Image (cartoon, rainbow, N blue to C red; front, side, top):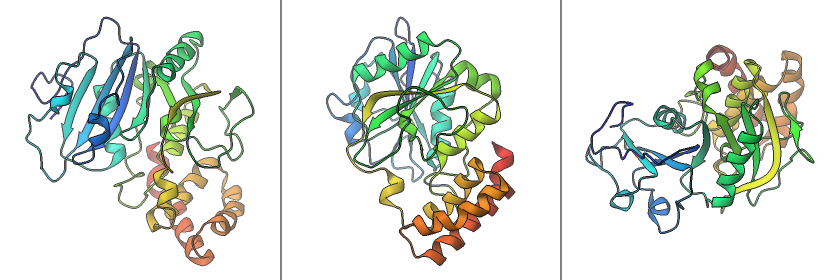
Length: 287
């Protein structure tokens, strides 16, 4: 397993001449086929891939490193025995050291131009803590019409993880972590990790700006859309509502979100309300 001082064969430590961007990819044992395919991780100057792989069933040996990653000076690999996507994102965060970090998944179609856009945007805006971009996804979504200050949320705009880049110095300074109570594999909340990260940044007064540039492609619908009828995904709406609204705003939004849900109204209302109470009791204080 990886640790910050680990020099075992369980991690490949990349030391390019000057790493500017760490691409933090989370994956699981048995689903790395795309990452291991030719061209999935293009070599780009200043870019390093951080691959955090979870294997809670112990199907891989402790010293496992995919042969396809051997010899890559631009890649760092870590194997972990726990589960939960936000736990894994924190593993990737601990493995990162570049000035800028980009949150990523294992099923994305990366491009050199996308990475260069992230780097140049962060370099041109030294005061910026978080940059939000666009991903090419086959879903109907709402974005600001142009570049915008998002220290306050934009109405109906909900970024996905792989549209988010952060300045690592900010993350370290404030001790910002991914909330492990939300996301795939969490105890009760199957979604909402992006919104909790945004809430954590806004709580600390971080500068957040949207740039209308496409940086990556996702070939299908996001997990939240595919699993929209699952109880843990519906319940997470309550946490999202709580992170974005005042208590009065929550009372107004609860029935509206239940009505918008693809699930029957009363089932959705009950789950969303339960999610909001869980947010108040457990999540809010952890952000």
